Length: 214
Image (cartoon, rainbow, N blue to C red; front, side):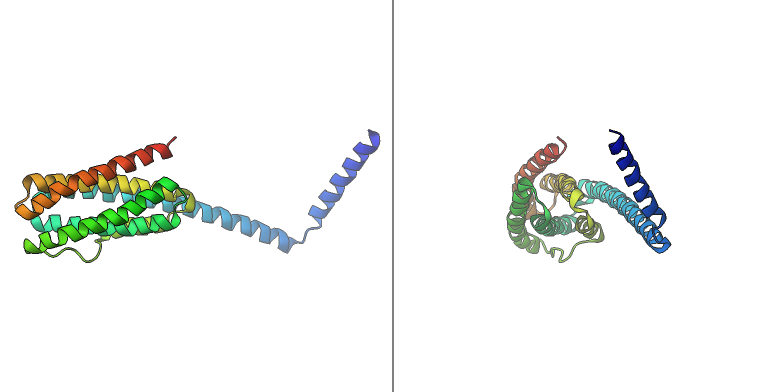
């Protein structure tokens, strides 16, 4: 027992001596590296918090727009409906490439197929109403895409799912509103036919959101 204690003491002394004899440049490098890592982690956390706040603000703005102007103004309805499809397709393609969750990848695949079909169905109705569908995303929806792209691997699924819940709530309000109060008969019919599919999407993504919280 005594020899074991002596051996342990000797080992500790050697380690202590080695630490004392460590070059100052190496110690400084290690400290700088640790400080840099800590700063990077802090910056990443702060960036994620900002992105989350931006998504929440964007969702609130979209919900208000869909419930007011988009519910009855034909130009606003067509612009928002077409951008909704574009956003859904682009976000879904990112999710298919990055998510490791089978349910999310399956949902994203459905988003590409269904929103491509919706775009094709609504385009002639918009043209008949004298409206031109949007050709690119507005700043708000582009912000969603940018935040989705910058999400860390650990945060990606939650970011995508939370965005999708908000986006489908907005789209459902838009479709239901225009189907009820819109002025163009063709687009009203198109909105009424699209609303059940949006509701189905919303139900699915809410279920996925609930499963992520377990």
